[in-house]
Image 1: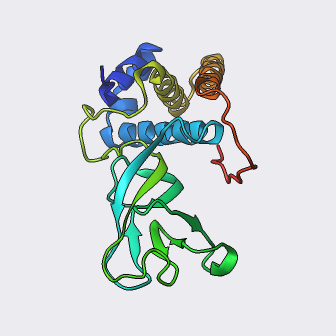
Image 2: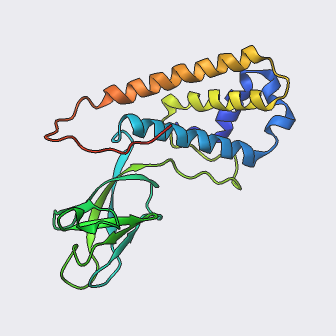
Length: 222
């Protein structure tokens, strides 16, 4: 089953009859934008807990040339949240370096500018042409269009979409000036408990990886 934004709104409204006021739910773009923001936050929370739970791979091909080739990530589906690994078709793993210190690692290397990977010198191949490889990355949820309808589906697995219901109910309650504070507080507590359940599931799902070294991680911030 796929959960739509309409499903989330309907369930959020069911938490309080006041949530169904026309003044609160009449703007579809506002509802879509709110659900999208909440879903992104949950994906970020997941990534800060377990980088691999929402990870995937994609085959990529660079621009053509003899050096300084590029790989754009904006068209990848699902969208890229954070790059974890880039391996060339030859099997060589490419190290990410800072554009200000490209000699920080041995070849092959790349650096990031915006959402594009840039080859350092001709590290990816001494031959002219394109270079193929595999990108492993933490995915983002599918982008929800604010000009679309409420029939758009969210990416979050169905067993966790009730968190989006609670978050939207909390948003509507806050938006309704004069709403009783105990209701808002209760929704905040319910969101916190379900997010804790979400984190616990993600933390324990894959077990513990074997590692020879400590791998640096920037993490996602809530």
